[in-house]
Image 1 (cartoon, rainbow, N blue to C red):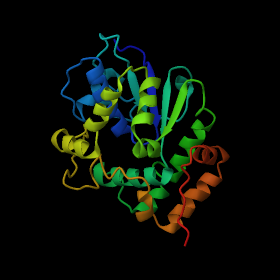
Image 2: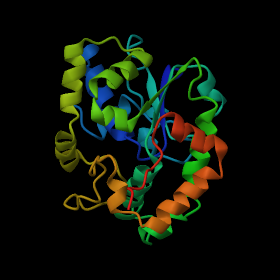
Image 3: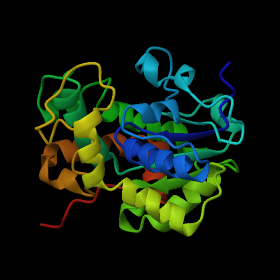
Image 4: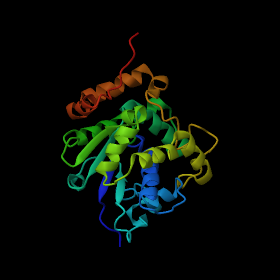
Length: 266
């Protein structure tokens, strides 16, 4: 029987969840002596998804959790759901990223990796399921809860700039006690280059085939901060900013954590 989830890492899609899952899985593997040969498919048996019914493959859901008999191992799940009552009690890490970078990354995921979207990136921004509208709704849902007593909010940008300190806070929030050396080793094992190498060998449990030789199709893509400036047209950036400005709650969250997309001065 699957135990109740002990802690959650919550994020909008393409905000660094795969990186954090692999880093945390490597850390848990060492701290608790699990002796797993971790890759980017079997890591879901250690840190599964809780994204809502039908929103993830069955081998990645809570039922896939493999360590119910190891009660000392923290049961952590990851979720792309907007805030709801299930997140009011357990320890939560909210991982957020500038929405322009999330939009670009999700476009390549849905078009080149998953194959569900056939248009261009500007059309994708207007898609009601995957585009800007979805981003605004997600951020608005979390604005009132990003500083709840049980919530730690960190940004992808903070983690990329100086990963050790924010990663240490994430680990502590999720109930894992680890040494500095263990934290550093988990981050080294989860470098972008190593994750790409692991993905090419194991895949990521994606049910549809994708081109492992196409850098834009990889689950581990560029992992850049600010790459949206090379991808989004000024019209699309204006559309994104206008949409967030129309939601006081969504824009407040971006401003509080300094992740409002800023256009360079002409």
